[in-house]
Length: 306
Image 1 (cartoon, rainbow, N blue to C red):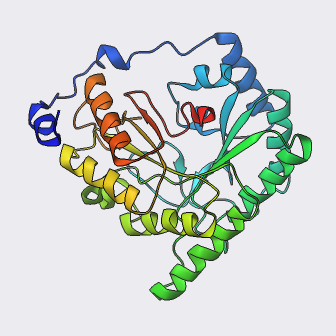
Image 2 (cartoon, rainbow, N blue to C red; image 1 turned 45 degrees about the horizontal axis):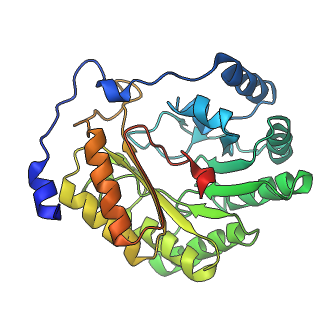
């Protein structure tokens, strides 16, 4: 089926009070959830799985995968889709966070760990060293555990764009210096909706980060993710995929945006499973080596399969 035919065949599905059947999913085994939740809470840690109430967390925990949230639980940005708390983080970082994450990884017998963080625009390095310290702590206990990083854009703090680019590159290279198994940074949505959805971030800054990552460490695969259902058009999604391939992004995840609360940006449409399958086929055709596309797919979903 051609791109034009696919585009013309899609009908807009208006969000209803109840979720479509394909978005209803059992949360997983209570025992597996309780084990992770108890350890995370008892260790004073944060996971995006819990903070974001990911619908796949039971499945991921059972598969030996979890996504830890570094830098505390308060983000310096106020993205319209995200459930993480916004505001001014505590000035002092937790000096024992990296080791506690590493201990939790070992206790849970995780094989693949994704490290992400709140945006820390208040820090000189924007939190780059949080990733380094945690990766080193995990590998000290078990060097065979694979670690993927999902970072913020490392942009900001300078009115001079040349200086801003230089600092973005320096912060990125701090993270890449410890050789994560995958470098992930999410575009989240199409270019037209960036200002509404990602407050404080831009399309170009994110693409430049992914491009810099490929050039700085060509042996480390890059990855990005998109949420669908925010008002984007089919042709805009395809253009975004093309833009990602232009900077040689190799892996992509596409999932349905689900509104965390009435305070967050509303869902504009629910994409059907078949539409996600079709978009996934296009992504493969465009040259992505790893594609996860489905209504309940999230950035870290099945990350270990790569």
